[in-house]
Length: 533
Image (cartoon, rainbow, N blue to C red):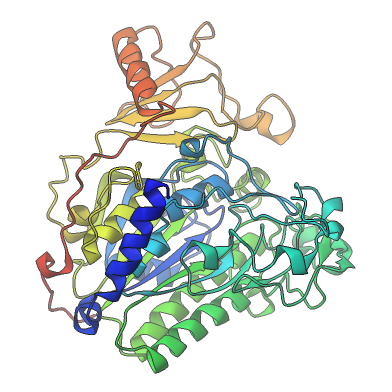
């Protein structure tokens, strides 16, 4: 068997050796993963926000809020791979892409350790609910793999395709209720429950059947094939209900074990369809109401763990998969004087900061000191090593190769001026690289790396290129957070240094950004805090 397969088999065997006593001491872990939510979309990050997000603001006040946090990619599918694998999508040898129709196979390869498989080594029960969107393998009646595209949806043979060979349950999740793609944008519009499809897609969805708030916020809803009874407007309420049911069932039937749950929302992805109970809750239109709905659902999660008596020993992480959608950003600026990108240049798909600088909040009442604001540079990929550090898993060097342990920052033991990360990679829409080293940022390309700023509404946000003869972009974010002055020529030595580092970090074989020999801190070394809110 391949080395990775042998290693996973050994880990599964080790899992059976864990005692219930040891498992009880480990925290429950909930990841709330938002969609297309920009740095400026929460009022704790943006004092000029056109609306308030009180529950997320409170969550930040009761834990730690990171101000230099980033998604691994500027689009959703590669970033979700980063969450589940602790790696950039370039490690797969595939280009970043967002899947549509029966697109796949999964970015998560067989034998590659996922975060769900990792926590199961320590006895966790695992669940994921909401948007999956890392690719799936679908087959026709002859067993042939189907590619993406809306027409191929009708060719799926569900008896042949299920249980899905690369769905969540094949990647370490005990329970799952997910959509294959963006729940309200990209067909297939169907639900996958524990690797099976309860109701196949057999109806043609028509966007005219959905509300169109403000006459424009239904934008980017594709007319593909859907299952009868599929929910668009109430998507996140359904995903929350499934998450809560998993947690309640766990407490009722497996309370001697910790749980790991991913609540994968689709707010604030297009189309903007706030549920009826949230319409008009803000003065910032449909998208303001939509983000307020997300805030309320986060609050419901916080309330639920409190009511179940597990608040003190539950770590909740909140993060987003990339920056805000283009037209969403433009319309919110025009209509409500709200900057979803938080003052940064760029939006979803772009390599500039607005495309990948995102909110990241962690709350764990008995372990993470309240009221912290950290400027530590971090990435969604770091969640993998951080969780491993908490629960005491020693990561092999070939696992989660872009994941750093951010636990010292969360615990307040890391000196703020000493960066845990010496560098950080991100990838834009076209797969081009951006490299951070302290305040220095190299974009190994010209232009945005994503959106076209030469036409349409994007043209208003185009900035003049200060070095038109350059072949890449170099900025000092400490002096120039808006990425306006390209230092390609004036800082040639730094540019050469960073390009050489980029070559090393992105090697096809053995490329990595994380350190080797990562040693977990372990729950026994995390002090308890006495505090009341």
